Image: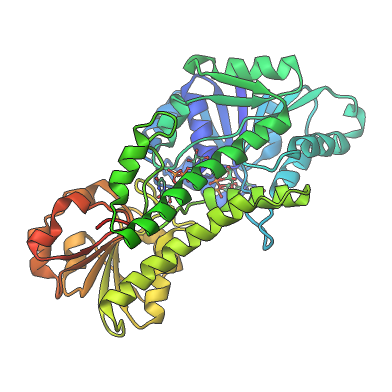
Length: 433
Ligand code: UDX
Ligand code: UDX
């Protein structure tokens, strides 16, 4: 099928490339000309495992093109996926301005049937608004043109987005015509997914509810971790014991410094706002948000308590990205934690395997090192903020000799089993003894 993907960010690019890999002919569009130039030159603007290789393959097979033009892509495509950003406004409400702009632009160049699919995370009832917008902006002589709007939310985790696309737990489609359903079924046919077919509003809500539920699970275990600290229990064992109950499940029960990224903080906020706007006070989610914020504050306080005066002390930060296997720094807990320590006068050194370039835009007065060992040199304490694989196998005997003081604050409980205390480290995790 000929497909256009409008918006070539983390979600749009992965979606476009994976659809091309499935055999479709895809045009990825972005209004950021520089991004399109980069992609055309064979470079990938983000770090996502496996993406560069897949792009090369699809481009070589002539199934994947990049373009700055919505008009060109719309004319050549039967299905058009919208994957532009939906950033939060000051109020927490998702900003739909890009979705509206893109809908208008698509409408203006439509001359035959199109299926317009919202891929971006949007509040319920956005599909109806897109449909109204398209109808309104269709050229005069095409006012009666047949088209469909559908919702097909993404559930792609950064760092394993390709795997999530190719082997999804489910594909959710919200449609209001048989034709739209059939086209979407055809698009996803090669991966034979479990399909949930529903109306557009429900599909939109599935996305918000799913991400908010996962955020709730994380905040729940973080709250439990706080209690564990108070009663001298071990949150890792508690999570293990809870997680073996199949009704609960172990995944997303990792206590730490809280969730970040471009989705959970924004989606929880947007869901609170959507509910409020429609007359429901979603207090549970407000608490989820509060617990998440408190997690960072508690970690900062722990560091302050244990190190006493931070002025002129050197703190080495292992990991900056909001999670491993991505270079994404959006809402990364590291930003708030580092800024708070810098405010107290601490000198920060930092190392991340992929996110340094993006971190430099957000965190000034920070010394960025090329690996964990040069980071450790002369540090009064180390913080583990992102659980990258390469940090799991660090040589702590060597690090012990490099640091000024062997103190480690483990924001992800990565080293709980490492017996760092036996190596002479002062070790602090989150909710672990
Ligand atoms: C975005 C949404 O923010 C998220 O809610 C949704 O689930 C998926 O899409 P992401 O792909 O991570 O997430 O956003 P981002 O990396 O910012 O990509 C958006 C892209 O759209 C950017 O490359 C931007 O240049 C492009 N864009 C934005 C357009 O092409 N046209 C516009 O009008 C606005
Ligand atoms: C999320 C959704 O999982 C995905 O389906 C899609 O909707 C986009 O948003 P993503 O933000 O890429 O994916 O990463 P995810 O793996 O969900 O982690 C989000 C945040 O939660 C990270 O900061 C991570 O460190 C944190 N997290 C995750 C925890 O603190 N504990 C956990 O147990 C799991």
